[in-house]
Length: 231
Length: 231
DNA sequence: TGTTCAATGTCGCAA
DNA sequence: TTGCGACGTTGAACA
Image (cartoon, rainbow over all chains, first blue to last red; front, side, top):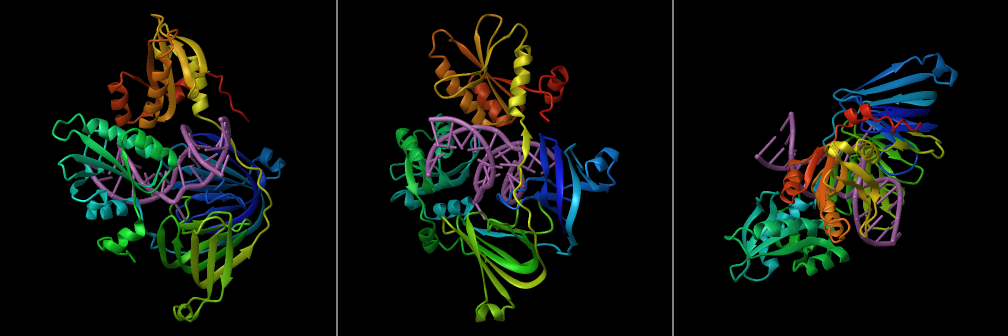
């Protein structure tokens, strides 16, 4: 990993064209040749970048660039597309290289897949007497998170989100429309389950006769141990 | 901006819980207090991070941590939520600080707007004899990208996306429902135009009687020169 | 390898 | 502030 602090300008062309005026920034060159251009604020997203696989070529600037005060031209070309990032370096304030080695990577806990597993294992959270049909029940427009039967023998389709907003209700609505065309399943009732449900999403769901279920992650993890901590 | 190369481990808790085993990484501390934890590969996304507004507090490790070889504990606490990132630093290999100043920011040249302009200028891509009514045709739920007339005098509503997925079809469906209530316009036919249309989106569109049109950006740009470079 | 869906999404705009 | 859609989305799982 190479760290360069420099005043520079940049041009990106590829899926869009973008220009970055002259300013002092961090140029981060990773071992795979990818380049990140960070300012001293904003979020984790760089101002501009090139993803691997790509190749960095540093050249001496041409006369016109020299005239503008450029001391180095960095051209970063993507290997598989014609995405291209050209950085004109005006002044280098810092330049250091470091050996980092491979990273073991991030271990996550508490994502949607985990909620789905736990709700399948604790299916009676839908109501006493409910039973699991299957997780990831396939349909023509994609799998339904959970399909279950209620005590009366009716079918229940469950859409699970970490954070429940309108998109999730729309998604479940499409599933319900499709599932209800199947005479073996119909009538199918919908339940929208999430750790948190936005008021608008709840209104829309209720308006469409879809039930809402808040999932308490900690409580569910307390009951169920199949999703034992990963670390 | 502060750049630290160090062997470290990290724990994030907030919207999810995540753990990062011991390895050598870049710790990037921005002027606003935000922290990025980068490995020497992957893409522009850090392994772990804390977005502003947040506060970094460096403390001397407790006895148990000292036992593990920790020399510094970095606690990064988000100001408005209980998101928290704790980094245990085992060895510091590099540490430097740099004054960058404010960044003028990125200047973009859009794509969807460009597609819209070009399709308006080449409206017969909808079929011979079509004519443009207007771009950004206003409705109660937002502007329709393009409204046109077909040779038979029928109305055509066009929704343009760079990448056509189900959301775009849903959006166009809402417009069509509304437009078809207007006796001056009805019946209104829908066309979903995109550089690329996902199979599921095409199925949904076809099922609803909405036409699909693939836009060839390069071919359109070759014909039309109204979208000259903005800088 | 391509496709589909989640994401600690982030970002920008408008009501 | 909140809602909504776009993103050079990125990333992971699965066919």
